[in-house]
Image (cartoon, rainbow, N blue to C red; front, top):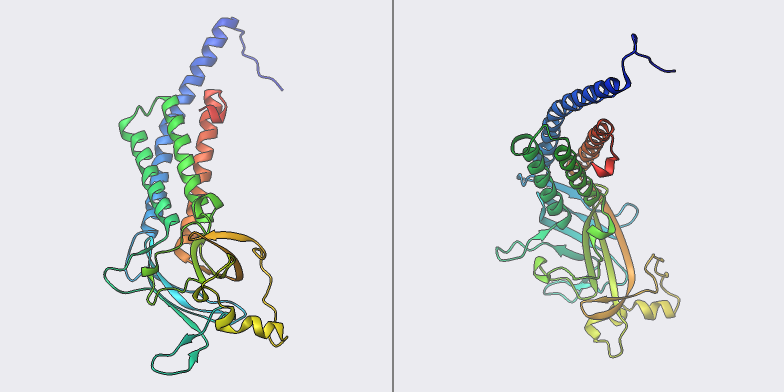
Length: 314
C-alpha cells in the first residue's frame, strides 16, 4: 500500500515538506517528553521514599523453612540493619557454654550489638540503589530545567543516562554477582555482633530479588597446624561420631570440596545454610523500577524513530 500526493508536487518540494513535517513531529515529541519526565520523577521519588530511614523500620522474620537451623529476625531501617536476634543450630558449630553452668546450649546466638560505638551493619546494595535514584532525579531535573528541552540530541543523551541508572538500580536489588560481591572477600567487622562471631562462622547478608538473603557458613581451616580454636571437629565431636557411624552425614552443598581464602586463611565450607526473607518495601521498589525502566525505554525508542537514528546512538 502506498500514499500519493495529488495534485503532484515537485520531488524537491516534497522532500522539503517531509523534513518540515518530521521537524514538527520531533518538536511535538520533545514537548510531550517533558510530561513523561515529570511522571518518571514522581516514580523515582516514590522509590526513594520507600528506602528512607523511617522508624520503626521493617522487622523481617529470618527462619529456615523445614528445620530449626535458623530462627530469628532482623530489623531494617533505610539502608541499615539496626536490630537482630537469630538462633542457629548447626552440627558443625561448637555449642556455647551457658553462663555460670557446665551445660551447653543447643543453639548459637547471633545478636547485633547495641553499643553506641558499635559499627553499623550497612546493606551496600541499598546504598548503591539510593545513590543511583538520586542521580536519576538529577538527570530529570537537568533535562527539564538546565539543558535545552528542545534539543533532540541532548534529550536523547539524558534518556540514555537515565535508563542506565534505573537499570543498574534494578539489577542491584535483583542481586547481580558484580554488585553483591563474594562472601569470602572481606568478612564483617566482628564488633557488629555481641558476642563476636566465632572465627568458624561466616555471616553474609545481601539483597536477592528484593528479599533479604542470609547465608551462614561453617568453615574449616585447611592449612597445616590449624589452631584448635579454629576447628570444630574436636569441639563438636562431629568427626568422631561420623567415623563411628553415629551421626548423619552433612548435607551436600554447591561449595563442597572448594577452597577459599577467607581473612587470609585457606578454608573449606563444611556446612552452608541459605535463608530468604521477603521485604515488602524492597519488592515494591523493584516493581516500580521495572516500570520506570520500561517507560524510559519506550521514550528512547520513540525519540530514536523520529530522529531516524539507532536507539543506542541517541
